[in-house]
Every structure is written in C-alpha cells, then in structure tokens.
Length: 447
Image (cartoon, rainbow, N blue to C red; front, side):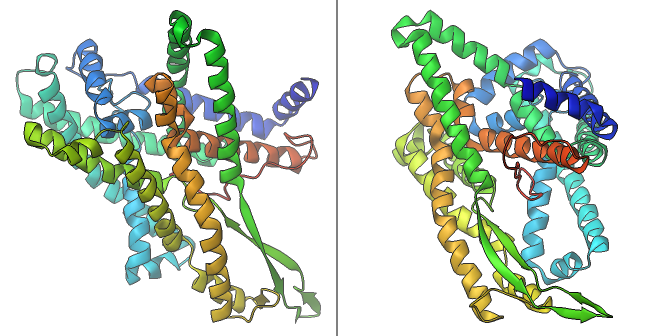
C-alpha cells in the first residue's frame, strides 16, 4: 500500500503527466455526458425501454450498444459512437494490403500516413450518412409513439446531421486525448463505453446471487470473482506474449565513427491480430440470425441453431472462425517478405539464417507456430461468457468474462499504464511495478 501511495505522489509531482491525466479525465467526462443527451424530439424514457429490449435479443445491436457505452440504446447524439470510424479503418487497412496504389501511399512515410487518415475520415463520413438514416428508421419502427409525427423528412435530415457530427466529435476527442492526454484516444473511448456498463452489471450480479440462495449465494459470487481474475491473467499473458527473434546488424563506418554491430530483437506478438478475429467472426455469425428473423416461422432448424448465441453449434462455429481469421489477419498485417527486405537493407540478419528468402521463410514459420496457440486461447476467451452463463451469471456481467470487452479493457489499460510508467522512468522515478516493466501492445490499437 505504501508503494502504491508513493507512486501516486510521484505521478502527481510530474506537472506534464498530471496535466495529461487531468485532460484525459476532462475529455472522458465530456464523452460520457454527451452519451446521455437524447436527440431532439425523441421521448428518452420510451427510447431506453424499447431499444434496450431490442438490443437484448439482437447480438449486433448489443455489440453496438456495448461499444457506444449505452448511447445507442439512449437514442443519444453519440448513438453511432466510434464504430463507423473503426469500420472505415478496417476497410482502409485491407485496401492497403490488396490495392497497389494504397500500398504506394502507405510507403510514403508521414505524408502517406496523413493521406490515409484523410481517406479514413472521408469514408467514416460516408458510413455515417448511411448508418444515420438506418438508425433513425429503426427507431421509428421500434417506437413510433416516441418519435415526432410531423415533418418526418426534416427530422430525418437534421437528426442524421446531428448523429454524424456527434461521431466526428467523438473522433476529435479521441485524437485530442492521444495528442494531449495519456494512452490511445480512440481505444480509451471504446474502453469507456465498455467499462460504463460494469458497475450496473456488478450490482445486478451481487443482488441476484444474494437473493437466490439456491444458486450458491455469496460463496458462488466469490468463485466468480476468482474465475474472472484468472481469465484476466490469461488475457494479459495473451496480450503481452512475444517471441523475440534475434537480429545482428553489421558494423559499418559512417565518417570516422563506427555504427551498428549491435544485436537487437524483433518482438513477434502472439496476439498480433488483436480483437479483429472476434469482430469478424461475430459479424459473420450475425447473418444466420438475421436470416432466421427475416424468414420467421419457415426458418430451418440449422438457421435457428446458428442464430442462438448460447447454443453449442453457434459457439463451435464461432471458435473455428476466430482461429481462421486469426491466421488471416496476422497474414495481412505482418509481411515476412517486407520484414526480410527491410532487415537486409539495413545490413541486418538473423544469426544462422541467410538474408532474403530464407529469412522470410524463417519469420513466417515462427509466426505460424506462435499464432496457433494464440488463436486457441483467443477462441477460448471469446466463448468464455457462454460458459459463465451456464452457471447462472447474469448476461451483463458474463460479458466481462471474455470476448471483445475483456480483451479491449486489458489491452487499453496496459497501454495507458505503459505510457504513465515511461513518464516516471524518464524523470528517474520508480516504475509502477516493483520489478520489471509493463509492456503494452507496441502501439497497436484496440480494434
């Protein structure tokens, strides 16, 4: 406890770090406050009641509500949240892999990065102009009595503009947090949306266990906390796990000074794909559910089984898709050939491996070996909420036992703590840990 208090004092003693933390807290408060501002003309009570019930039975809407911190079910001006920007980032990232013109822009350094950011923002705006009307039309279908009955067209246009402006404002807040605060701003905003649901879910679980003594009562709740703690440890090990590949750089003379000759390491991440495989797998698994609801009574038993998030076949197929997408996303984000070329260009080589093709094959082999156990652990964490539900854990609290919620929380917290520790060590203070250092995800986003 004394170590903790000393660390807090050291953090507060650094003026730059103190201001960054206060700025982050200020922007986070603004974001949470805006999440409760309802669109003009909508009855907020009926919006929360109707949209909440709809999200409970729809995995896609529940995911959107989670990432928006409940703003989606509040019909808030921030209802669309940061998801349009995430979708645009994924599309642009895939284009940078598949389209040569985008690959060329990406290799242009800082100017190329600015162009990619501009394209991402433009695509985000286009997505918002499509999602905004779709969200409002869904609102009207779900709660027509809470919507304005006069001049629907004008309401649709103005509300779409408000929703688009709200999402772009969230993006601006994220960028300001990255520049002037601590941590990755966009990732922190996603984390805030997720963690905002934790107090209510925690309270519901305590009340539910205490009122249902046949379910184990307080003892069962303590077991849940222990299991949750163990899953968090597994998630931390997954996020921080790396395979260090030694690289030797040849010594050369620049002017009169010898340069190079040192041995360094390439940290290949076990969790290189991040949460993207889970998001891709869930997106595909929404399709059978949508088809089953569209077909109605004529839906086949297979479609019904695959649309049940608690069912066996749904989770088996989800785990298989996560493993497949882990390999796919790792392959498109890490290019062993490019890594080998960059290493050769800088007079570097892996000891015992010939530069060029053999180096690329060696790195590719290592990535294949470490990706397999990583994908299995990722699939296990993704379906952990289902196992928690089998032991009568409430749906809201079970979501924190795994899936995107847990992985994003762990990753963002580690990144933020790593930045804080860097400020402490730079000013000759002790780090956050008594031994070792906190290792984040090397600048990777949470999505």
